[in-house]
Image (cartoon, rainbow, N blue to C red):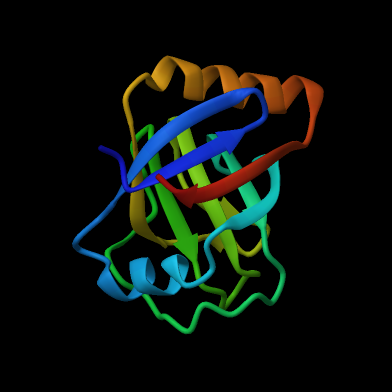
Amino acid sequence: MADLKITAGPFQFGANFVAAAPKTVAAFRGKLPFVSQLLHVRWSGEAVWMPLADLEFGVGAENATSYPAPGQILLYPGGISETEILMAYGPCRFASKAGQLAGNHFLTIEGDLAQLAELGRLTLWLGVQPIRFEAS
């Protein structure tokens, strides 16, 4: 059983929290249900992201990576760039106009990653998609 249900555009995914990021997981759980807009990345490769401006999660770097695998979800808590969440669906190097970033890997999508790639292509070609994270 997945920890979360993610509804993004016309797709639904199950996702599990990552034990190596307990502070990030706790901070994100406190914001559930979490609703945002999903955009295709500009500098990072095959990924989609949620720009969150100055939204505070109250965490620093934890289990951070610049090279997420498909299905990994990262929280960048702010610093040299704005707060954001990134979801990789293919080869990815997390970056912004300020340069390479490292985000906290706190959530992993389980199951059919082919649908995640379809979401990425849909977002690339058709634009912004709604996204909602909620407890399963």
